[in-house]
Length: 462
Length: 60
Image (cartoon, rainbow over all chains, first blue to last red; front, side, top):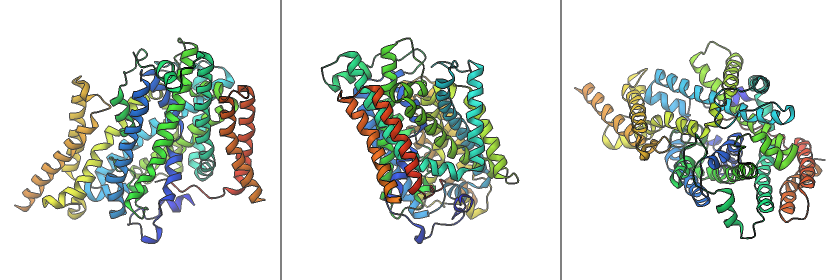
């Protein structure tokens, strides 16, 4: 099934008979965004010293902005063009630039999958009791950890290469259960907080004084304010909405407002699950301030026993599986002569190696921000090409029209935008921290693309 | 059989939420809650396999 369906309409617009209604996307988004990453991100908010108001209202606003980005930036183009992201990019940017995009995306997918292997491996640490990495560890700290990651990663890789469909079925079954287990984490954590603090002052007071206390972040962590939380929630899936990766999803939507379905993922996963996971970590620190390790396995086990451990393993696995598969697809586009099986295995092993180094998992907030930033310029290029170029009298789909392998205007916009954004981050100006810089970056990418396209096309006309 | 599995699986999902809520209300201990969660998890995965036969849509 998977091979054929993965290839369906990959090089042509999705026909009307294949369009889907709103409900088709709700479960997909809820399941995809309530996953292994949530078990790391929630606790890392606490480590970043968020306050209760900042985290709750920052997430409400940031997730709303993400949903609106899907609804008004990504979905409208998706339902009109009805093409995959790669097809759309190739028409605009040319095959060689798409290859570069695939490479960048594949590498980032690898590292993301690696961090999910890390998450699953922490569950093994509970059973086999080997030392696991701390919050500020960048390197593996025990042979037991290395072996656990190797075992988990190898299993995930083989299954991703051989039995994608089977794990996809398991993920389908696990998704509703996993969402409710996350909810259970939060409810149990709250009750435990009430018991250990003896608080009778009310839930919000408990949140402000014991759970999300604000103040200084833990050593080595960036302090998160309301705007950090807001922008993180907005941009953590930037690659998908502003970056237009979900063109590939919403090309099947009947109407562009079906982008609203992303709210199921945002408010189930990026609100409820993040808060629930953060409650568990806050409780851990409250009970032992010296125990700052962000290890989903032990946290989940303390709250929900074996069910919690199974949730951690399944959450990490069901996130890593499609991620490794996608990375494999991206790399195979660069190496079309290699079998998908071999490329997926190789990708999985690369992800496993990455997973041994806790740096990515422990710095997941920054990694996710970087991931979105890396791919954002191409989303700006797609948006500009589709909506703005016709209004300015500039030809869209330039690479396709001229048979180009590289649209230099798009490529330069991508690289130059990243260079400018790196410069802005390195300037040290708090307004241009990694979590915020993608916003001005989008406009910079769009502006560069317009100017260069105009120059190139005018020169050609002369 | 399929209908029984559906009923059992939804009951299991309900237990995953209800048990922690009862714990939150102070009616049961954490250990009891964990036992209920474990049982509910086992029931869900076994029962859901009987009727959730649709394949997950391949992600792009």
